Every structure is written in structure tokens, then in C-alpha cells.
Amino acid sequence: MFDVLIIGAGPAGLTAAIYTARNNLKVGIIEHNVPGGQMVNTAFIENYPGFKTINGADLSMSMYEQVVALEVPFFWFSVQEVKKENDYFLVIGDETLKAKTVIVATGTVHKTLGVKGEAELSGRGISWCAICDGAFYKNQDVAVIGGGNSAFEESIFLSSLVKNVYLIHHREGFRADETLVSKVKEVPNIKMMLNQKVTEFIGKGKLEALRLWNVKTNEESLLPVAGCFEFIGFNPSTGFLKDLAVVEASGYLAVDKHCATTVKGLFAAGDVVQKDIRQITTAVNDGAIAALSANKYLK
Ligand SMILES: Cc1cc2nc3c(=O)[nH]c(=O)nc-3n(C[C@H](O)[C@H](O)[C@H](O)COP(=O)(O)OP(=O)(O)OC[C@H]3O[C@@H](n4cnc5c(N)ncnc54)[C@H](O)[C@@H]3O)c2cc1C
Image 1 (cartoon, rainbow, N blue to C red):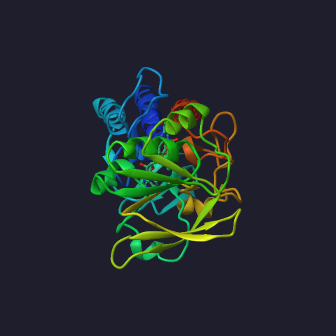
Image 2: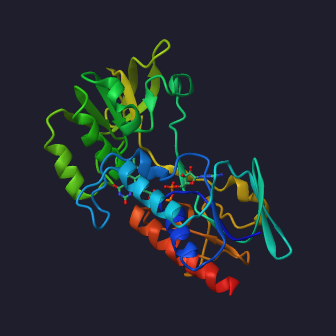
């Protein structure tokens, strides 16, 4: 029986592991992908204190190694269900593990546009990870869809690899930070295409073009591109908690200031929590609070 099982090895889960292990709790961490969460897919991180700029994979590895050095066991499987039985939890997937408390740090998964051609051409030109797939499009034209920080950061990264980046946004204004918007405006091979919606992905076996609809002029056009990167938002990864009645209508988890849910012994941290700001700093903040709250609850 574990004192604490942490689900998800992104920055929130890894921080929770550091704090629980250093409190001598018997802790395990479960991850169905690689450690680091969304950080792994991020080219440059320039707002995590201590590093002027750091590659997301490097920051992931440093956090992971810190947890490994504390001898926290990792379990590599996908959690399908969490059940509460009396005073303990069953965390169920390829294995079933038992714990007195659980910290959910499963983050979010990217949204899709849901338009014609998207399902067929996913992984054949359509991608959600510039650092993973950007190199496939050296000296070719690509599109980035989105108006937030991720779309802007990843456009800058892609601009050094590809011929042109068409940054497509369905509105006139952006959600991205002003600094990023100004930076992008100075990159000659990033072309902004505003008030445009992608209505279809076109290609035989691989992406060849996007069908665009200008929401202001009502005109349709075709944009030939070899790759397209979507950064249009996220959905919370909480499907495995359906039996515990802690998931809000939004899909996110509501917690109090101690990162506690309404189920005793069940805590949540990071992007999976209902909140306004989803960043690495806010994820590690929640991870520390959830871990110390779990410690207090156990004692
Ligand atoms: C392209 C991009 C660029 C970004 N750039 C920045 C930036 O520059 N600065 C910044 O501060 N933030 C940035 N962010 C946001 C930041 O990465 C997230 O806020 C942060 O990673 C959230 O951490 P988390 O631990 O809550 O969740 P995540 O990082 O999403 O980690 C959750 C982990 O849980 C695992 N998991 C999910 N479900 C299960 C399951 N059922 N079983 C087992 N494991 C599971 C996932 O595989 C994942 O590893 C960026 C995000 C993206 C997508």
C-alpha cells in the first residue's frame, strides 16, 4: 500500500513526487507517456525562473532525474479508473495499485478542429508538436493555427527550420503575450493570416493544402502547405475519474486552496485543475501544495 500515488509525470506530478518523497512518504508515480508532460513538446521555455532559456526536454529530464534520485518508483501505464474503497484508493490500469491518497496531475490533451480531412491526415502533415515534427518540413511551407502563446512560441521555433510559417488565426486580436506578438512580427518568414478559419485539410495520403474561409470577406481560398501545426486549446484528462463525482461540467477538477477535491484523500494539481493560468510555474506550485496537503492528511 502506497501513502501517495501520483498520476501523471508532468511538472505538477514530478514536483509532488519531490515533496512527498522528501517527507519520507511511500510514494509512486504513474505515467503513460514519457516524463515531463507537455514540457517535452516545447522548444523554448523562457519564463521558468532560473533559466533564461531552456529546452523543454532538458527541463523535463532534470526534473525526472531529481525524482529518480529520491528513489521514487515509476509505473508506466495508463490509468483507466480510480475507485475509493473504505479508507484507500484503487488506481487501475495495466496494474492495480493501492494508496491511502492520490494526487491527480494528468494535465490536458490538445483539441482538434474537427473539420473535413483532419482525421485522415493526422500524422500525415497535421501535427500538434513542432519540436517533434518540425524537422520534416525543412525549406517547405507550413501553417500554424492558433492565437495564444503556444502558437506564437512554436511559430518562432518553426521559422528557423522551414521556408514560411503561415500563422492562421480566426480573429483580429491574439491571446498571446505582447512580447511574443512583437517578436513574431519581426520574423520575416512568419506571415500572419487573420480572420481566417480552416474549413478543410486537403491531400491524398499526405497534407497538400488548407481550405480557408475569411470570416470578414466571406471569401474562400486554398493555401498550399506541407505541414500544419494546431495549437487551439486543450481538454482536461479526467475521463478515468468519472466514478468519483469530482469532475466539473467543464471537465476540469475543482479544488480548494489545499489542492484537495471533495473526496477525502484525493488531491489534484496542475493543468487538470479548474483555474485561469496554466503554466509550468503554476503546475509546480500546485504540485508542492498537493503533496504537503496529502502529507498533512496522512498524519
Ligand atoms: C506547445 C506548448 C508550449 C508551452 N510553453 C510553455 C512555456 O513556455 N512556459 C510555461 O510555463 N508553460 C508552457 N506550456 C504549458 C505547460 O507545458 C503546462 O502548463 C504544464 O506542462 C502543465 O503541467 P502538468 O503537470 O499539470 O500537466 P502535463 O504537462 O500535461 O502533464 C500531465 C502528464 O500526465 C500524463 N497522463 C495523462 N493522463 C494519464 C493517465 N490516464 N495515466 C497516466 N498518465 C497520464 C501525461 O502523459 C503527462 O505526462 C506550453 C504548453 C504547450 C502545449
